[in-house]
Image (cartoon, rainbow, N blue to C red; front, side):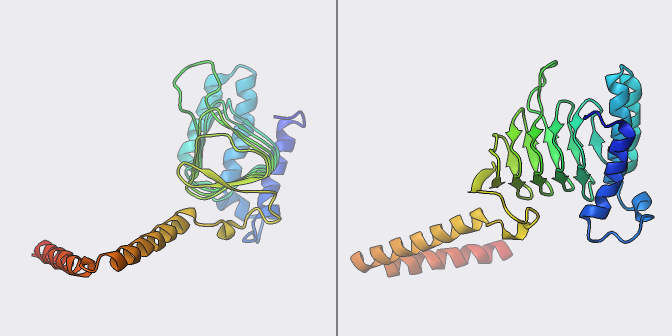
Length: 237
């Protein structure tokens, strides 16, 4: 955490919905509709206590926060300035995770570890101005660069360079170069869909090629169709 002070951090945290959420209409909504803001504010206090040696008290504060907000942030992790947890339910940020400045994190994100070894960095580092889509799992001591986009429900197990877009399980880099609109998740291509389209077209080409060479292929296909439909009827019964 930077040296601007815990209360300055909290003021910035409470300003993020106003700046980043087009659904925001009134400051009273901060008290009832933004659990991510409250979780971050409690984290700022708990982290300060944790650094000063009051680790048990810090854990108590974040334990209560978890019950109320359904967000699990370890007080020992490092979270930068102007971070916004949008919707935020189910977010988990592990003990040795580092989150940079101006990071946007959606609901269901896990910044988790893959090791049980004590005293080592087990959780990821997230670069500045990165957007992490809902349901993403970033696992292990890896580094996500600055200005990155991680597509929803991806599982990231390897480091990603700056200015990259990654999607999939495991996540793969599909685009490099900073996007002018990092929130445009609808423009991230569906690589699984593209792969299936390729496979179907490839199979069709192979079938057509085989049919030209072997004239009895249609007869065999008809026999397979009879067996398949017979199977479907047996399942219904």
